[in-house]
Image (cartoon, rainbow, N blue to C red):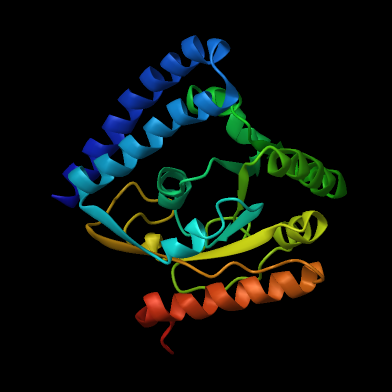
Length: 246
């Protein structure tokens, strides 16, 4: 049954994505950047809904009041990264327009990447090292000034359930350089939508949103440490068995 449901969701995504991307290609030249985002977001909302209805992947959001308290502030979301689910669902969940930081290779994905390239997002060439970091800062400042929020996955890539990899400091550096607030996000999506697996499992994902962390008068290292400590501590609350001593 899990296999059938997983294949059904995959086929639904394969059918829906080119259709929705084509609608975006036709419509985007005639609407504002903000309306482009709202139109594109319908895809995220739909896939999140289909994951629930087809595969039984439900979710619960804790701490949304921490988001609502910051709606008029510049914010960088720093999130745990375990699966593809959060890259889809967080955009659907957040009440603000959010800007992803991602490797430019994603722009080459047919339909999905092409539509992504027409939105206000930050795409970088990871092989450029310092130049990529500078690009994140310059583009980040521009989009924060336009009222967008930025989301970064400080682990850099999807990580196995129960792991605690070293966090990258790019998001903290951007927050420190722009005096933006940081909102940390923990979740356990890797259990239901595993990395590198087409199988999807029923259950409830817990998305826990922490209190905003001020970057004012703090070094990037201090912001980085506070963010990592909150996320990793919260993971041991919402997914304690995964972190139990082996």
